[in-house]
Length: 54
Image (tube, rainbow, N blue to C red; front, side, top):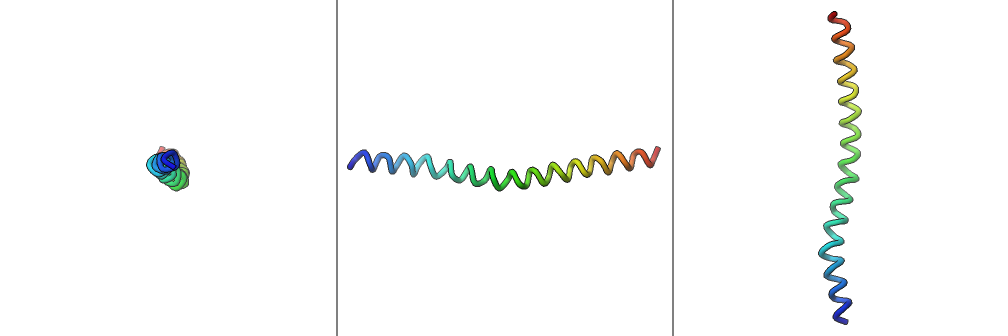
């Protein structure tokens, strides 16, 4: 019975933070991909603008 309580504590203390970290990484990954695409578009726009100015 004591082993079950120890395993329950280990899972509760370690498993929950791991689950939260994975959840946040998945959510932020989508935002990071979106930001990367926008930065690439901005870079191309700046290049095109510089070509026009020359």
